[in-house]
Image 1 (tube, rainbow, N blue to C red):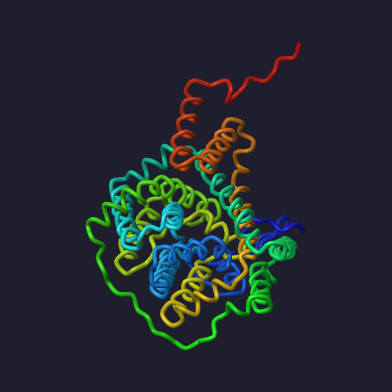
Image 2: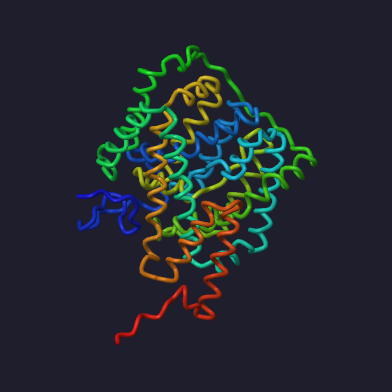
Length: 410
C-alpha cells in the first residue's frame, strides 16, 4: 500500500480502505516511537534557523536552546496536539543576511508580541480569518511549501557537494519507502543515517568535552530604542507572514488534521503573542507556530502533543546542561539529511492544496497567491492582499479570465 503523506481522513492506527480502529482520547499525550519520530519532523526547518540566528546575532547558545525548548513544552501542554514552535522565518532571514544585533532582535520579538496581542484581543484575527478565503490560505501554504523545497534542494542538499547529493539520494529513497510506516518511522532512520555519516566523515567537528555546564536564562527587558528599531526593521516584514501562516494557515491545518478538536485562530493568536512577550525578556529567539511544523510532525507520525513535548524536553536539557556541546553536534550533522526531511515537510504542505484542485477559480487564486508569497519581496503580505482581492473581485464581478465559460459546441 502506498503510504500517505497527509490525509486528514485517516487517524492514528487507520489505513486507507481499512476499518477504523479505536481512536486515542482527545487531549491525551502519548510517548511512543511514532511520537518520537514526529518530534524529528520539524528539525529541518527549526534547528538550522535557530542556530543561524544565534550565531549571526551573537546570542548565548545555551539560553536560546533553553527558552526555545520551554516554549515547545508550553505549546504541547496547551494544545496537546503536534503544534510545534518555530523561529520567526522573516526575522531569521533578515538577521542572518544583515547581521542585526541580538538586542534589536529581542526588541522586535517584544514588538511583534504586543502587535499580535492587540490583533487578538480586538478580534482582528477573527475578522481576518472570516475575510480571507480558504483558497488564499491554501496559496500561502503553497508558497511556504515552495520556499521550503527551494531551501532544501538549493542549500541543504547541495551543501556537501557530490557526497552530499549521494547521501541525500539514499536518505530520500529510504524515507520514501518508509513514509507512513508506523512500525519503522522514517524520521528515526533518517536521523540515524545522518549520525552515522557525521561519525564517519565529520568526526573532527564532534564535541570532545561532554562535561555538564549549567546555564539558566537571565531576565532582561529590551530597551525602548531596540523595541522601536526592531519593530521597523524586523517586525513589520514579519507580521503579514505571521498572520497568514502562523495563525490562519496553522489554524486551518489543525482543523484539517484534527477536526474533533476546536482550535480557533484566536487561541493561536494568544499563544503566539504570549510566547513573544516572554522569550525576548529571557534572551530567546522570537517564535511562532507554523503550518509547516505541524505538517512535518504529523507526516512523520505524531498524533498528539507528545512529539512536541519530547522535542522541547531534549532542547531544554541541552540548553541547561550541554549548550556548547549541542552547538557542536548541530554543526556536525549533515545538512543533506535535514534537506531531505525538509523536502518531505514541504511536500506535505503542497498536498494541502488538493481541496481546491477541482475549483477552477480557487485553484488559480491559490497558485497566484503561492507564487507571490514564494518569489516576491514581502511576498506573504503581497500574496495575502492580492489573493484576497482577486477572490473577492472575481466572485462579485465574475471575472472571466479566472472562471472561463465552457466552450460551446459548434
